[in-house]
Length: 236
Length: 236
DNA sequence: TGCGTTATCTTGACGGCGTCAAGTTTGATT
DNA sequence: AATCAAACTTGACGCCGTCAAGATAACGCA
Image (tube, rainbow over all chains, first blue to last red; front, side, top):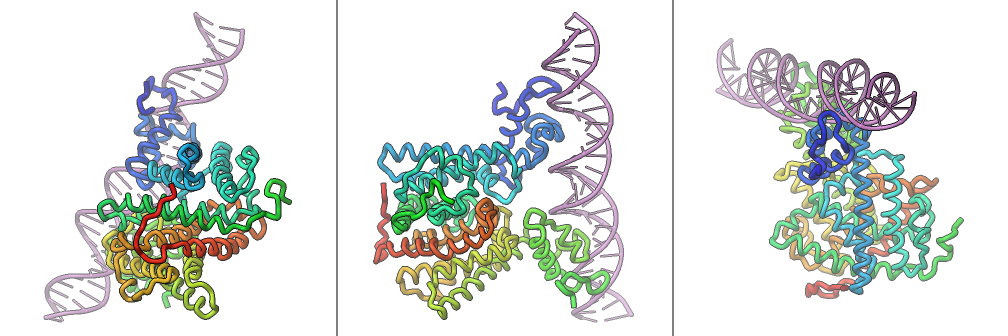
């Protein structure tokens, strides 16, 4: 039923408008990108009046926040899957999450831009925060593992981002994230479009990314200070 | 006169509406950011009807394109100035342009987002293209110099970006750009806000950037193949 | 079973947006 | 001085997000 969540159920009441709106929003983002994204258009596709979504999301920002939460979950799942695959194939785990990050951006650029774009999100939203902490935690965990640190998985995954402000490995974390985020955003925002114009251009870029760029990234990580003087687990 | 380019000259005709619109746009971007940017608001500040700008810029995209051109020029000038300063102080030239890039983003985040954001620009605009080629050329030049390549300055600065698709140093160029662009955008888009919340948080981030991150960047560059025999390495 | 309560959705309206067509004013050219 | 093209205004159109008020339907409880 409700293929794509777009079909109305009854007459007056929808049944699951919240999910239908999210589905419609994803479809609009996939078709027109974040520029052509409109609350009224989503409501139209859900077969509902423009004011209906207000009851479920409050306003446009609320809907975007729900989408962004899905985006963070997508990031977490894809990165974890990439790690699992690397573990099997013998590839590097850190490179794997970087490629997973890029994969998410390329697969759903609209949703990715909702997550990381300049559009305002509900800053206090619990679900959003939880999803963001989880995704960030994976990045932190893999960076620390790549540095040879011992990591208590549970602890890392639940720490708030602000608690990393004094982390001994923050520079390395930011380094990894900057490369991955920078390349991903430049690619989906069209900064690299001139380089993609040649036949096979995009493939070449992706090869460079998962090849030489990851090599350089890992080489840079190996220049890290050998031992952290402050124990990252309990740090004052 | 025309302080800020906002004051009208005569009654019906403005005199220099084009410049006044650009000034007003910059002011709006500085005050409200790219989210609160509106053509009508700019026209209002220039003391002119909503439809007046059409004659000078065509439409909203035209105005944004003019702003983006200024943004690229800003990037070029700041990066060149940073190189000059590094040349005097004995600092690293490549790190200097990376810090100049970040400086531009932090100084005028609104304009920076117009340059690199998801907003559409007039893709065929000559001035915009020229400014972009110049800024990109500086990045390429310094990356190649850091790799020990000999560089014919004029040639590099005028090549179109698409012509770098087969460049032997493309991976290193993308590596440098990704780090710099990634860190800059994450900072001004609020991704690092939780890390800035602690007292002195932003200063710490900037210190990390111009310190350890640049060290890692330069270390990674030193792993480049000595001769451009273009062997795309793989780490699988 | 029937009734009231409450969540859900519609209707209609408001102001603001970008853009267009048509009309008005101005400065420049001849 | 007459003409003309450029510069700007006016008014309108269809969008947008959001709000207040009303309609509807599902649910809990007698």
